Image (cartoon, rainbow, N blue to C red):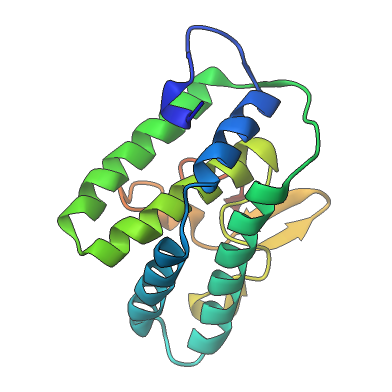
Length: 176
């Protein structure tokens, strides 16, 4: 079963979502990964040079490691997914995919993986989409304190149709 095959009229077990994500992750090819990494490198040219290397390293490492983690995750997860939140996330990602389709082929390879990682981190791992330590402008980073994740840009990006901030579990970092 793929994510699109999920029956939203029923309760959705976390394990069921993980199984669907694992099946889709199995369709991610080396070509997808290479094209996605090329896209990430190309896009990072817009990142401030003072932290571009750190940004690239954090993003690329988390990107590669997460797809591998999804494929190899053998844990059993209990509980149910919030169906409304999952539907909202999938709708947001479908809208972003429409934007990606207007862009180049590398973006679609990136998006295939990005979609899986977004759903996995949010609904299976209960973690933010961007990894802890991910740098942002002004020297700010994603951080975790007392079990809560904080993002320095969440509030500024909440209405950006190309951002996943509305899906992400991180809260706005009030120190920013």
